[in-house]
Length: 405
Image 1: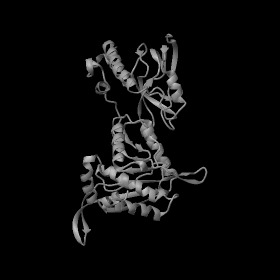
Image 2: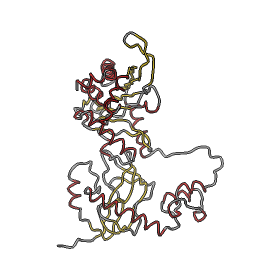
Image 3: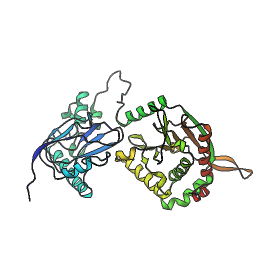
């Protein structure tokens, strides 16, 4: 057996997903002098889509870190230098690069790689804690202390082993006179959302139509299907998919440069999900090929990963229509902004008790409001109204609607 060839290698920031050109370093998991294994996660970065753990395909000793937390690195720029690198998986990586453009180079070779990462990361964390100098692990904490003139030697750390954390520096900093505002950099996820919504308002001549509907039977259907993991969002997603097949104009986008409306054959169903980092829109691709149970499973998976900050970039692209259930915030209605470059977005308000004409009598029913914002370039009010009326009929008679799909 030939011995592996050791050399010095520089690992550059890989392509993190469709359309992403840069990422901001959030924190390093390794320091100069650390030994790393192949496929070990070395840094956490934030893109316009998500926070991503980036593994390095090379094994060896960390020779240099090209950037500090807060720095923005371009895709293809040097990220980390590994001395005495041994890369047994280089051929596998070459094959990956020749395949899908969505492959995150260095993401590992499966379960074995994940086990290696789980085994290695705690060892490095423990080693750095043991040598703590001076009980500060995060460059962000050091930078924050420097910015606010905090002497770290006088700060008591509240972290494991007395490690000084960001909250300790915040507590120790002196109040700044005449400072009555907080400035937050508009970048990362928040910046990407701002850019997309601004572009939507600037380019899309949108209009909104809405209708109140009796959702009593929808709740009853949800209760019947709850044991199969099917909730309200999955049922609404199913009705949207059927509606988009009947009204394909709303499953489209506009190619302004060529002056064309592009109707998409597949349905990439996006849905708004609130996470600790803000609002993100995970996507269920090929939703038209899924059963209601499969839709529910996919929605639950994307939501869980998004809230944990672990949603892969491939689940944040490819949307053709968005469903936004803002009723979870306790509001009745809204005029949602279209998720550019899509052509429409459906908003669903809270379901509450309201007096309602039912079978010729006034009754207390569960009522919600559906709002559809659409790109007036792709269709007129008749098409939008027809789609919204279809959804209203499905909500009011869900069993009949499900029987037909």
